Length: 115
Picture 1 (cartoon, one colour):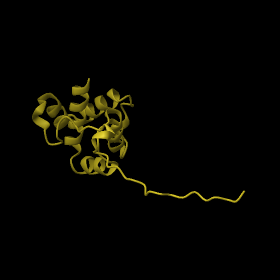
Picture 2 (picture 1 turned 135 degrees about the vertical axis):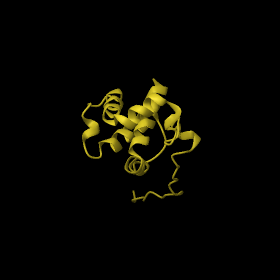
Picture 3 (picture 1 turned 180 degrees about the vertical axis):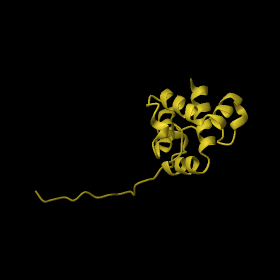
Picture 4 (picture 1 turned 90 degrees about the vertical axis):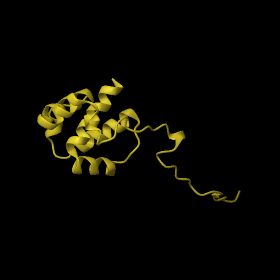
């Protein structure tokens, strides 16, 4: 019996993360929709450490998480995974590096809307 190599008849297909078949959704609110929930907006503006603690705990993480460098990016990525929200770690980094309070408020609104 001779050796028969495997033959590939088709190229791998890359599926984008935003296809309907992937089951991924979007955030319920935009990152700049801070005034959609005034309570969260005020908490994020004046006592973001408390809001960060609440968001981390609601996600099942330690209240100390928001105080670790880079942890809010990881928290955002974890939330996207948990709620099947499209995006990437790079997107999470950009939001949390450029608009940290808006990103935090968006995460809090998402948790509130999803219960």
